[in-house]
Length: 203
Length: 203
Image 1 (spheres, one colour):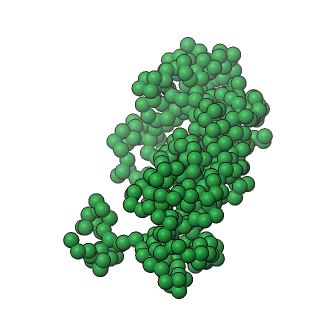
Image 2: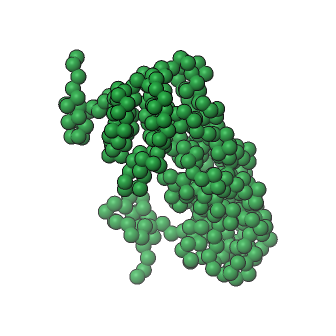
Image 3: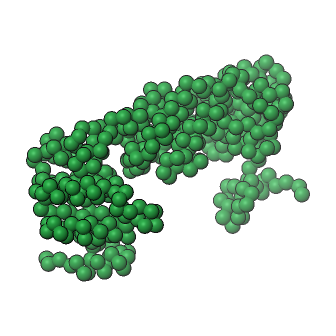
């Protein structure tokens, strides 16, 4: 310790550094979180630390759908009440939760764990596409629902998958584009509005 | 597993719940962080978990200034090059880092660990005020710099401390109020501008 500036104690700086690795956490948020944890009851801090270690130890990827799961195959793939002739392709496990919340889909899933993005150097080989093709080649799947994000990467991935599965002769659909429910026409961007016009549905 | 909705794996939900205890982390941020940690290298997740446990195990409060520290007394209180006749009172350890960054203060500190806030039920007894008084009663301190926040709680705490230490006959100062450097007069709120006028300085 010289006569210069004082910094915070080493374990606190280290925690701040680790927290800054998280998405959306800059130096100020990291400091706020670190000092919060310093003041939090020891049991709460330990519970968080254990939960972090636990997901690394207890979570695996389902060998069929590649979703995160505690048991392989995952509960969805194991569930005989679900429609095993439909597979919905998503980019991330979180997308499955969003689709399940709608209560409108009873088929199976396949998680790509990313989207094709030449800018970020992510090609088809880095995604779980080979696993999807192997699954489809086994047979039994009649419809592939492409539920990738409605953006550049999502569309590129959907196009790629469409081309890949065309020889298999199964039905390939993708989520409808249009106005978000509850949205305001006045504030819709022109691309969305254009898609809504193109895809207008009979009443 | 029934035929109903699918939720995420239990360890992931638990981690999301723990993350939601953090300030400023809602359900969506918690989900994003949890899935980030799932994908992160195991070493990174473990380093974060260990850093959290470490701050609980290795950090104590300095018995003199009540700042967080690995060694008691803390490096500031131990440092003979600092001016031991001045004590700057702050609400939180983070405030010390902000003051140190200015490079303009070479005295000691005292951390209250909060501010008087009747609305939140925080009175003087919940703060490290008794420790401050004990420290001042030992003698040797000539100036007390009140650096509590320029808001209701900070001002109330400063007033309270001022009254408490008046009998000791030491110099009591507080941080100047005025226009923030780099700010724009046009956008200054009237209270700040009023304080800047009241406290106008000779050029």
